[in-house]
Image 1 (tube, helix red, strand yellow):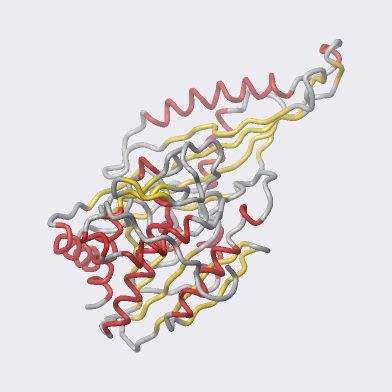
Image 2: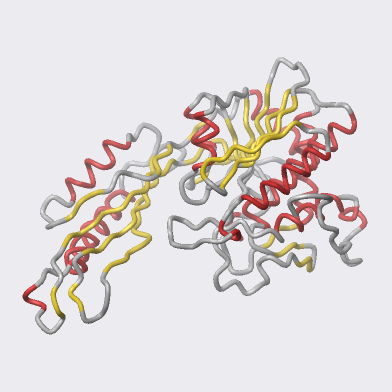
Length: 396
């Protein structure tokens, strides 16, 4: 898949409507993307090319080059590149179109994760919804607009790695001096426009015990027991956070413990245990204040320590009256009949770009309820509509 033409896929089934058959190129593109595993190892000991964005990045690079788009790879770390395409038409404005290449793992899926299947107007497979449908829609809309010679702004097409775990690709692109006047960040929003969302800070807490044979547990100190006390305090704190005075758009902050690991064997008193914290933040909350508050909650617990956050990205908030937001809303109405401008409790790469002065919205085909599920799918009709909406937005 590194060289030559993209693989040929079987034609869409005859059960698809004539209207959907018009979008056949984007369906084939999405099928090819889903067929390329690009799972994020999520900081765990998973390896191999299926836990890398390298193959899918090279495929997208070739696809863009074939369609006369200047493109390069940015290696954020070995085997994990961003894809960056640039179209400079000498316009006064530059639009960023972005959607990430990585997916969560495919363990225990009840559909074939990397054999894209079309059934009842939906395409199934890992990443079909989050966010390879956005990648395909952005690419197809750009190619269609170029073919008509109607590009109304300079474009940056950015397809980053490592969004699911550390927002690493977006942060790398930001450090390289990324600049744009407005951004559309592809995520499954059911074609609603998300103008504000929370940020996220993630870190690990460790407890330190002492090893001993399990026949003589009193000779050691059990790190898992120590962690149990920490978790109880955090659970209570999470409930208190949820009851705080809400932000007018985004509600209250949230926190959860998502991962726990400790011990070497059942017959050894464990000397180490760690948990992973996910803290959803509001505008104005600083990383330092978040960590300090959590440390205060744990002040009476024993033998714990924090690891510095491996991810800390603020939220984003954009006025509904922002001209670009209104323009995108008008494009949605023209293609779908109605538009919805909303806010969301999750975080995205948009928080990274907002921090460097690029106003962004989050928008794309697919329902967030299908993201990361064991039968992930996207409605093909939404992909067609997304292509049309993005075409309108970038062509005027």
